[in-house]
Amino acid sequence: MQTPAQKRARAKYEREKTKQYKIRLSTISDADMIAYLDGLDNRQGRLKELIRADMAHSQNPR
Image 1: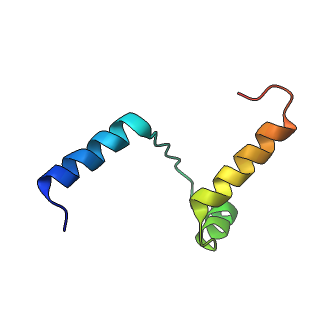
Image 2 (image 1 turned 180 degrees about the horizontal axis):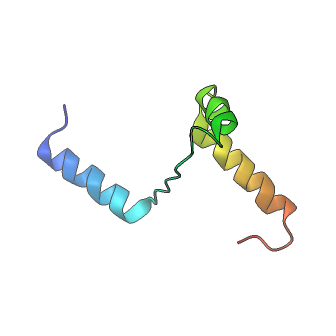
Image 3 (image 1 turned 60 degrees about the vertical axis):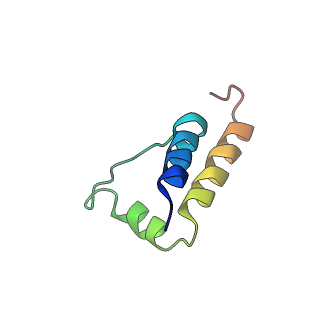
């Protein structure tokens, strides 16, 4: 269990040092992607790998 001070410190760190993205997938048209992601042990790690590979491949990374 976190103390109130630890909760505040974690919230401050997350606010200042992290960014969160969210996607919504359709269970009908995106069922293949949902099944793929559900089968992964580390979704975040895999998505980061794919994005970094795309950035390295791209001439103009965003």
